[in-house]
Image (cartoon, rainbow, N blue to C red; front, side, top):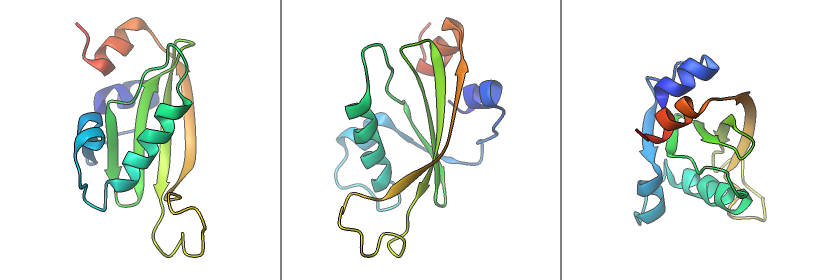
Length: 121
C-alpha cells in the first residue's frame, strides 16, 4: 500500500503506522487511536458500489489517516482524513462523528497497479 501510494500519488507515507482491514473489522476492543478508522471503514463499506474495492487498511500518524482503494471505473482513489479530537467533537450530537475528509485524489490506474495494491499475483 505504501509503495502504490508513493508510486501513483507521490506521497511518502513510509513513516506512518499501518492498521489492516482485518484488524479493524474483527478485533474488539480496539485501541482509541485506531477506533475512528473502524468508523471510516464502515462508512466506506456502506458507500461502496458494485466493482469498488474496499481498502486493505489505513496508514495513520497523529491525527492524519490515509487509505486507497480501487473504484469501479478503473480509477484509484486516495483519501486523506483528519481524526478529530474529543475537543473538536464536543457538542456534536452524532457520537460517531470522529473524522473529516481532508483531501481526495483520483487517478486512472492499470490492472497491474490494482494487483500490486491488493496482493494479487
